[in-house]
Image (tube, rainbow, N blue to C red; front, side, top):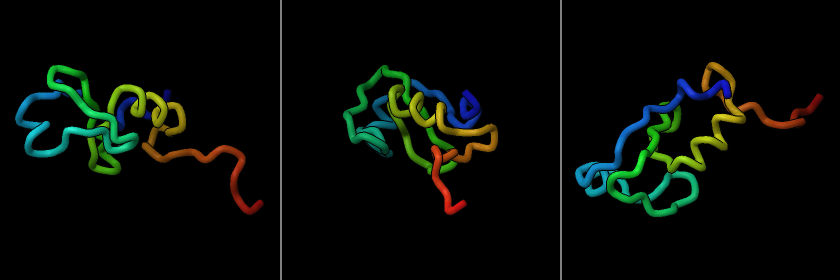
Length: 73
């Protein structure tokens, strides 16, 4: 997974959940206190484990999402 270094892993604290977000920035699933959450440094949002893993699989080492089979050429 090339995108692992694109995220900061944190424990969801009451302060983060109250001040910043209490839902995943990708799927909008609720984040709970004590869970591992991941800050996406390229889009400035918190993600749950599942969404972070899915994005990591599509990212290169520069945190860019590599689209599958797309493009004009």
